[in-house]
Image (cartoon, rainbow, N blue to C red; front, side, top):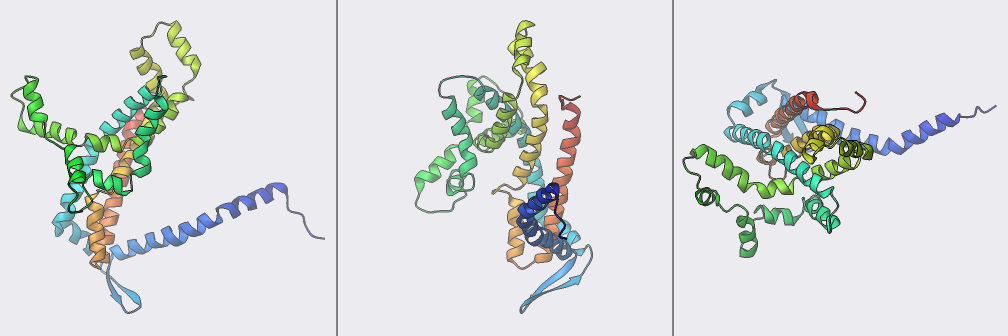
Length: 299
C-alpha cells in the first residue's frame, strides 16, 4: 500500500522546490567562485591552453599587494576615510528628509519620487554623466553640468559671512563635504525610503500621548521618533557602508579589476579578500557601537 505524504511534508517539499533554483544558482555562481578565489589568493595562477594552473605560494600574494602595490594601499586608505566621514552625513541627511517627507503637504508624492529617482537610474549613463565619469569628447554641456556641482565657493562664502582665520585643514574638510553634497543626496534614496517606512510604523497612540503631555516637536523627536527608528539607523548604516564599498566610483574595485584584466588572478584575489575582511570588520565595529543606542520595543 502506497504511503500518503502528509500535508506539512507537501508544504515543505513545495518550499524546497521553490528555492531550489536559487540554491543551485548560489552554489554554482557564488559558493564555488568564492572558494576558487580564496584558493587563487594563496597561489600563483597561470593560464594555459584550456585550463588554469595553480601553484601554492602561501601568503606571498597578500604580502606582495600590501607592500609592493602602492596604488592599492593608497586607494584602500582613501576609500576607508571617505566611507568614515560620508556614512554619518548620509544617515543624518536621509533621516532629516524622511521626517520632512512624512509630513502632510501639497506635492508630497512628487517630492518622494524625486528623492527616490536616483535609486532607479543609479547604474545608468545618467549617473556617469553627472559624476563626470563618462569620458566623451565634444559634449561641453554635460561636462559643464557635472563640474557645476563641484565649483569651489567655500572661500568666498566664508569671507562673505565674515569668517576669517580658519585653518587650511578645516577649509579643506568643509570644501570636501560641499563638493560631495550632490553625491550624498544621490546615495540617500534607499535610506530615505527605509526611514519613511519606520516613521509610518510609529503608533498613533504615541503621538496622542505626547500631545496630551504637552511635549514639543523637539521633545517628541528625541523621546518618541528617535527610539522607534533607532533599529533602522543600524540597518541604514550597514547598508550605506556596503553601498559605499561597492560604489561604481570605487577606486579599490577598479584596481582589482585592472589586476584581473592583466591576468594577475592571484594578486586580484588577494586584494579582494583583504578588502572583504576590512569591510566585514568595519561593519562589525559599526554594529557593536550602534547596538548600544538601539531601542527595541520588546525591551
